[in-house]
Length: 176
Image 1 (tube, rainbow, N blue to C red):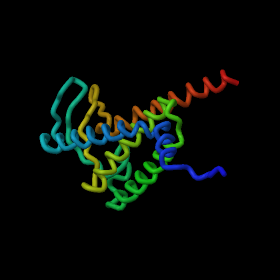
Image 2: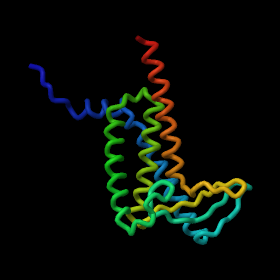
Image 3: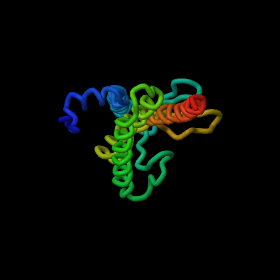
């Protein structure tokens, strides 16, 4: 008689064959992000630029909104809305990683980077009520909104997801 119930050993083997094997990258992103935010908060005066290069300053800023300070002046309710969205998206990313074969490296790494960045910013939002930003890029009087390593990980992760989408569709079309 054959049982359809999977043993715990089979579940472990299955999880090691999924993109969940990229969880180490999630942890690295979170640790580096929180460390650099701590350093910026400890060493930089709020709002005072510290020039590093002609186009790059370290400037401590607090963002109570979302990307590009969206809803930053909404009165405080946005903190919990963005936290709930981050929790929901993080859950979806974990499920997606669990359903993604380990061999899809671009997709797995991209999902891990987005998840790590989302969790890094979620920590700030829940604990501080704002996200710590400190990287300021500018050129000829034009300033890009300040950001942090979590934002950088999310952006790179999104780029990897786009690369995976474009390349995997090419590979699927060639195999047909």
